Structures are given as C-alpha cells and as structure tokens.
Length: 82
Length: 402
Image 1 (tube, chains in turn orange, green):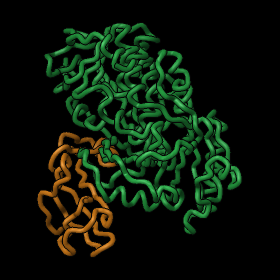
Image 2: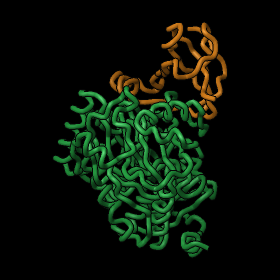
Image 3: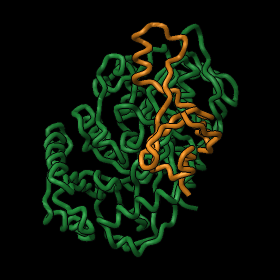
Image 4: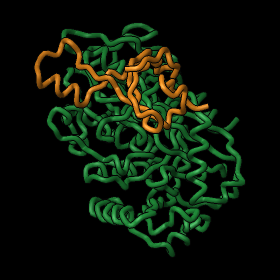
C-alpha cells in the first residue's frame, strides 16, 4: 500500500495526487540577511522525526493543508487545514 | 565455502585505535574507496572507517549498480568518465572479480524534443570524453531486439543516445574489494560501531565519539548516506540536502539475453538484466522526504505500467524482490565533495541516485584532497561553497533517475 495523505476535504488519498511543500525557516541564530537568504534558498532541516509540512492536493480539491509526519516511518501524526 | 567468504575470514578485525590520521564515517562505497585510495595512492594507512551497520549495507547495497558517464555538464562528464575508467581497471588493480561488464546504455527519445536533447547530450559527452552517439531505430533494434519500437503505441522510439561503455558491476564485490584492499594495507574497518557525536576542539573537528569510545582524528570525513544532515549538524553545519526514498525491484529469471541497459526519461524508468537473469527495474525517487526503508506496491504498479510500454515481454514475469534506499538529494542534482568550512571536517554527500558509479573517482579525489590539502581540480566545482558563490551545477536531466 502506498502512502496515503489525509486531505481535510477529500479524505485519505494516494500520495501521487499531492505536491509536497516544505515549511522553510532559517535558524534563529543566523542574523546576517545574506546568510538567511542563502539558508532559505538552499539549506534544509532534513528532520529525522516528526516534521510539520504542507501538502497541495493537486489532483483533488486543490487546497493547501498542513500535516505532521514522522519521516522515520512515514506515519501521519496529525492533519489540519491551513 | 566460496572464495568470497574465505577471503573475508582472512581479514583481521581489530578494535578502534585511540587516534587515527583520518576517521571516515560510513563503510559504504565512498567511505571505503576513500580509505582504499588513501592507502594505495598516498600511503596513509592510519585510517579508521566507522560503520553503524555492516560493510555496504546502506545505499551501496541498495542501488542498481549502473556505471555510466553520459552526464549533462562538462565537469560531471569528466568526473564520471574518470570513475568509469577507474572501474574498468579496478578488477586488475585489486585482483578481485567484480563482475564488471560493459553492456552499453540506450537512453530513449520518444519525441522530437527528447531526440534533440539526446543528440545534444551525445555531442557534449563525446566532446568531454564520454563516448556517446545518437542512434536511430534500426541500430536500436539490433542492440535491443526485445524493445517494442512503437512504445505500446504511445511512446514510439524515435532514437536514442547510445553510451557503449555503460556498465554494471556487482555491488557487494566492489565494496568488499575496497574494504579488503584498505585493510590489507593497515586501515581498520569497524562494523557495528555507530558514530554518535563529533569531538570538537574550538571550532575544529578533532575526532569522533563512537559506541566503542572516543577516537581522535586529524581529519574526519563524512561518507554517510541518508543521515548526513544529522552528522553535519554535530559540526554546526547545515547542508543543502533532503533525503528521499528510492525504490527498485527485480523480477524472476529470464533467459540471459537482454544485453543493454535501457533508460527512458519520458517514461521515468530504466531496466537491465542481472547476472542471475533477473530484470532489474528502477525509477524516480518518492516525492516526500523520508528515511523509511519501506517499499510500496504503488511503486511496482506504476513502474511496471510504464516499463511494459517499451518491454512488453516482461508482462509474463513476476516481481521477486523489492527494496528501498534513502538518497541524499542536493538542490542541483550534483554531488557535494570537499571541505566544509569547518576545519578538520570533510564531506562527500549529495550522492542522490548516482552514487554507485562515482565510487572510485569520489574516493580517489577525496583521498587526494585529504592527503595533499589541495582540492583536486576535477571536484573543485562540486564544493559545498558553490551555493554561496552562486555556482550551482544543475544537472537534473541526466541525474534524475539512475
């Protein structure tokens, strides 16, 4: 069984209907604007564990929503509309 | 007992020393190749390789063993051609049979636009040293008679770029040949010894904290696949890496007569036949970042549907085995090798879906960098600092799948 993403409007649907969106934040300790831009452009937290992320239901309701997913297991922790 | 097991039993496994000249994290292809070339090319044998699992048990044991050099940018073509050349001499150099076999790689074009792209790629590759030519349908039929040239009516084969040096090798033989070569010369490989931290001396990385105690090191090299962001974070470093799953599967045996490696960017799959006669199929990475080794039925379904357009004979085969690796994807689909800005800490990462073919050259160049302190010219464009310098090495078109 493939990964199913719980869309708040359409219910759980196969991952291929969705576009993944990372929520990017430069770390607090970076204060130099250029360094922050560089970080936002290229760097990733690449979290091993629970991560908050956005998904776009491209082949469904075409709305963005936010879920929390454990990247170690691909288990969805919770979902909410955003 | 086969010769492979026999050879391994001759190796002496010793506990980690208190200090090494070079500590390498990760005993996969890249880590072991770095140790091997440090020993053979530079006489540096006070080297420890730390591995949380077993030798070649990560992505080195989960790839599809394709060796090719037909990339899309000059620096990459030169680098991978260097690797291809090293691979060709590696059996003789190590004295081990690696089941290396040149079989030719056909990269299909199903549209005029794709044919144009493949023509351009053939020109670029030939120019920079990786023999490639654009071939038409008649030649393709000779090279791979099993192809449905109509592509199931939807994906006609208009032409292909043909890379005759495209090859495969046996992955575990490659990693073990490198491990043995390094260990025979004095390097130590520590399996089941996870690195849990880095020893810092001011802003300098001065060693590794392992399950077997602290080990000082003049240089620490991350050759980690899959968990490199975590290791880099211990040195206070952020990496432009996202880790995604990549799946592959093999079918049951088929008569050993499928010679070339067949790839299609438009159909997003590639296929080759293993020495055992299994058809080996791979495709693109899973869309979400993940560290899970779980495989999905969905993947097999989608790849089979696409692969059958070109290779209808496979409809009669059964899927035998499926597996997953985790790939460190860089934003520009090129590897990241070299210094990190943190003294004493080197990385070789961003090996995404193209790491196996780069094992010898990656190891050779990293070894040269560590031994001489100078970044060798072939990997200079692939440094981590390229993102800050606005000199990314975008090559998605040729690195996308395998």
